[in-house]
Length: 410
Image 1 (tube, rainbow, N blue to C red):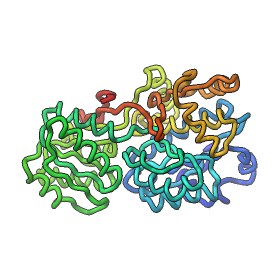
Image 2: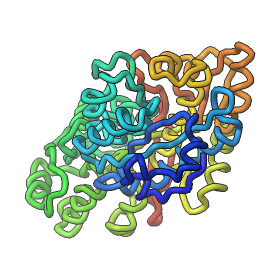
Image 3: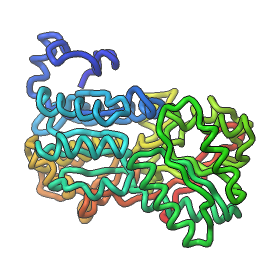
């Protein structure tokens, strides 16, 4: 695959203008995979390294000879604008006009649910989200077409509750974005926190992109003396505003975040001194040191200025590899064949293959040997509802930098 199109042009161009005639002929036999990311809107800060992880996987697979006797993977991009309706429109174009074999994404849980129900489930198109974590994703009546490499929020809520209690915090207030992700993670955290003897003094589901959240924060801060604010949201569509409002008015002194706020840009834009000691949870890795090191070295060679450990990057890289392995295992780019093969290449038993080992995996499959992909984010092991089994990261702001502390199973 050759990435010759400027990123924004690729997202916005009509299909007829995506390539020059010669390039179009060269790509005629390519296997087209859609990629729906939130290039604009509340999740935009997360996208550059996530996209870079997908690009790296595509380049490695194509450099190793591609799939199905030399067919290259072609990445067809779309921007869902961190908006469900825009996501449905983007998915419709990819499925109907671009005829993609599968889709990596969307990122947000609510957008994933909307896209699945309106577009991909009726069309039988498999999707793998690297970052949709809400429990509601597992409940889609999806005909086994919806998968995710991100660990669901039920586990994240349990881990976060333990970390908060271990920090000596007994009472918290919660502000959670009013969507499937925010409501789902707030609920799982609350149940687990109360089960550990903690108390939620107040909870508020907030709407995105408001100019101020001072009234909500004042109410929460004045109710039953909370020791910290748990913030479940996205930086650019309310999360940073909430932090600034709280800091400027002295409503809270301690802050706890989740995966949606796990980004260095939050610290840089809100203030390192004000957020020192903030901690939280996010997507983790259960990868072996050798496989993680191989992935990180390859990522840094291709993207020296980006962090291979940024939120959901390894999960996005793994989603691309799983699609390629499923296509190779099925011997077909047919949508139904791909979704039928995903568990075959993701789950044990099988010969273990990891990041950067596509050529080896293809050789094994050609010999009739089942493979088991254990990726940059660890063993994926899709369960009956397409959910990955993995780890949750404990992170903390130290010296103005967001640092990983540990990878936890509970």
